[in-house]
Length: 179
Image (cartoon, rainbow, N blue to C red):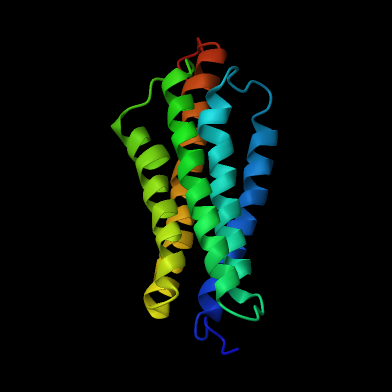
């Protein structure tokens, strides 16, 4: 088989390494803030999807560099992962609407719901494209992996900033010395 992802090695090494490192960093950050994390379904709506997006980005990078006997196998995986991601993200939207820890604003709906659905739909669309327009399919997979990485970065920052500036700030007593 010809290497259908020839020329993409550096891209997938960089994105995959970044996704893997950020997954590990999320675990470190969650451990550090474990002294008083918000209770309730907020984590299922905001924290868990971030790890899923990073993990899917990492998985896509690995799939693109595996020595497949034919491009049909990775194409099928793109379709399944993309469709599963759309369904999962719809579930996240339901969780966001039902959780009571935080009232989502437009930015949250855009970057926790709309953008991931676009990324996963783009990935799912790469599957049928692979059978007639491989170059376009390769760009769709790359764009999806990169989108999920950037979405994860934004959402991780957003969650940590919320926790630090809102949750921890409310749990600390005001300083009386003016400092």
